[in-house]
Length: 488
Length: 129
Image (cartoon, rainbow over all chains, first blue to last red; front, side, top):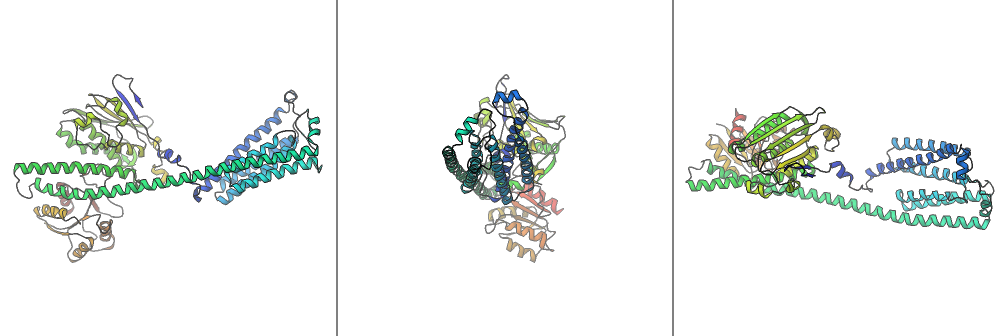
């Protein structure tokens, strides 16, 4: 978010996806047994929620059915006892299945729960169809809801069984009314007797049954085919996602090994260059000393870059799950971080002033130090000589902490603010001011902030300075998957 | 003056570190593998050991030797041990003592490579004091 309204001061807020949200975008792996049970349970609960809607509609009919004017306006007859009986059965059914879903986590039992719901629903629906009007109304098509839902949640064979069950129950109902004469055809519409007689002709009944069942089979075929295609895509997507995660893990591991391999020879070069510079091999002529110092300096710079690459790779690798989270006295941490950059500040005659209120924060100590050191070191490096860097912390009434690190340095152009947290990104002004930087420092800051759910706001004015505001709140962090309390 | 043992597969690093430590009056021996180092320690107990973490034959050979010293050997249990690692990069700055104690490796100190000799000397002095 870039806000340029204030006079020449650009404001940028670093936003990132919470790890939980990122994770939720990953398609569930429906082939994984461990995930099947929760998925089935979620479906069973959803069925129950839909049923409450049906119960509400029936109750509404019962309530409004007490008013004759409403009934005559709608052309409906008064609700019979069947409405209340159906509401009662559905309520009992729904309560039972909801409780059962909460208690049972076994996939087989949850599947039995789903089947139980489907069979009871179809039976109750058949009774409702009989009372509403099996031939005269389009109520029979409500079976389609069950057929389509079965296609979505069950296998093709299972959904076919549901379709056949619905068809059989409907045929049984109609035949009981018109051929076997076990049930008397009935309807909720007032002016329907003539229609009912016409529809009761045997050839019309047979044709109607034939067409209705045919339509259901076609709907089953289309819905189940589409559903199985979507399911296959889901499985493919989950597999691709798994492969990508594995490739990323492998890449990070490879990078860690490679950078380690690079770091070891540098350790030897650095050690030997120190021998020359520190005079362990005797006094060197001035020119030779200059060369040795250049080697040491370059060696340090390269080592720092490798160091930052390792830090970044470590932060994004899965080994982060093993991190040790502790409640830290952040005032102590901040003073320690300031002490680490004091020598650079002294060299450039930069004063670091503080106004730090004590506060605690649960974090990975090394990572929080990395974040603060990077920001304070940046403030010092990008300050003008004899400038001032200020580090403060304020604790709000709700426990939220605001840490600010501000300098009076070169500043960052407004259009470049959104890019400063990218890996290896450096503004031209930054490169001109300080050549010795890898451009990874703020990428590390971003990773650590994301892990700890620390909100960062950057305010900068070109040539006048930059302020990093860190909003640290335990309440924010409780939503994070890396929060130790949630991992036990 | 103390008897120090450096265990690292990098000969150049061993030689440079040994040279500095000898200048400070210590007696220094170097070994390029944990097995040889263990044999040498059985013969003569060092006052302090500098041990690399990763070796070409096994990435965790250094850790294994440290664990053996701390957990399986009565004789070597109390020998001060500084582990030198190029991979412990969670520390905010590259050239400082990580200052961490691995719960599996009690009383083991870590220094991150590349090491500054001044840091190493002061660490050794504090452990030998």
